[in-house]
Amino acid sequence: MSNPQDLRYSKEHEWLSAAEDGVSTVGITEHAANALGDVVFVQLPEVGDTVSAGETCGELESTKSVSDLYSPVSGEVTEVNEDVVNDPALVNSAPFEGGWLFKVRVTDEPADLLSAAEYDAFVAG
Image (cartoon, rainbow, N blue to C red; front, side, top):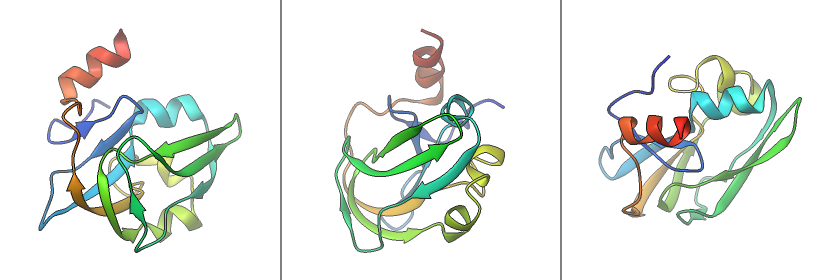
């Protein structure tokens, strides 16, 4: 699967959808999901939490390791994906669809988010 062109990406391997009414969806990339291995536990920020771009806001535990989850933008969490909390394997099987992690009302977006092509080059580099 190639990375969807309509998303933006962080160097920490999160993706971000375009804002809809100021709210963007966040998930991890297929590259990150594959590197993690089988995800068995997801800890997400709570609705109402404030997240900061580049800062840890949760963690993903796999059969291989535990990895921090970083927010690609700053803002307030408006929704978490309870399906992923209940079935963490969605992160592996559908990282860009049902495996999204949380939604955030964006207050600040860093300038260093990557396009799909830039992210592909970053991963290949």
